[in-house]
Length: 253
Image 1 (cartoon, one colour):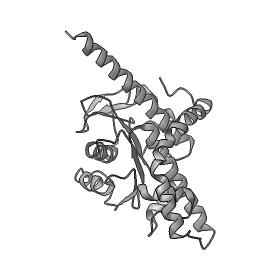
Image 2 (image 1 turned 30 degrees about the vertical axis):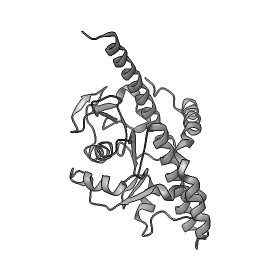
Image 3 (image 1 turned 180 degrees about the vertical axis):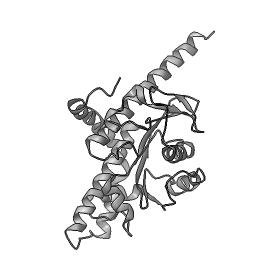
Image 4 (image 1 turned 135 degrees about the vertical axis):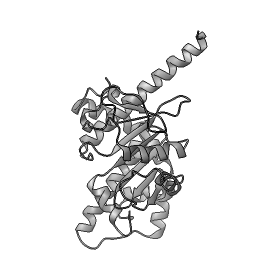
C-alpha cells in the first residue's frame, strides 16, 4: 500500500514522463518538417524521469511525421522494451548510440542523431565544421568528433562514443552524421538546429568557390558569446511548437 507521499511522487513522475513524451514526439515531427529525416532511420531519445534509468525512443518502422507521444517506446539500458505503445521494435544502432550517451552523461536528458545530407557532408569534410558563418562560430566550442567504425551495432563502440563527446553538446560522427545532447528535448533540439544550419551554410558557401575565414579574434569572441547557446531554447521551443501546431498537430496523443 503506497503512502500519500509515494502516490504524489508517482503522479508527478507520470506527469513529467508525459511531458517528455510530448516534447520528444514534437521533436520527431519538427525533424520531418525541416526535411532532416531519413525514412525510418536515425533516432531521437529522451531520458524518462525517475530512478529506473529508462529512456524513450522511436518505434522502428514509423516515419518521423507519424510519431506521437504514446507511440514512443520505453527501453532500459540493456535495450529491453519496457513499454511499447504500438510497434515494439527499436533500431539496434539507435540503441547503441543513445544508450552510450544516456549511460555516460548524467546531464544527457535527450539525444538527437541525424543523417541529414548537409550534416553528413560536413562530417565527411577533412576539416569538419569551419568558421564560415556566425552560426558555425556559435557552435565551434560545443563540437567534438567521433571517427567512423561502421554501422553502430557493436556495443563496445559506446565507450569510444562517450570518450569522444566528452562534455560537449554536439558530436560530428565522421562520414555518418551529427548528434546533439542537452538537459532536455528543447535544449537538445536547439543545439541540433544551430548545428544543422551551420552545416547547411557551409555546404552552400563552399559550393560558391573560395571562402572567407574571419579573424582569430572574431572567432574567439564568438566562441565566448556562445556559452549560453542552450538557453535560447526558452525562446525557440515555444515558437517551434506553435509552428508545429500550425503544420502538423496531433503529436501529443
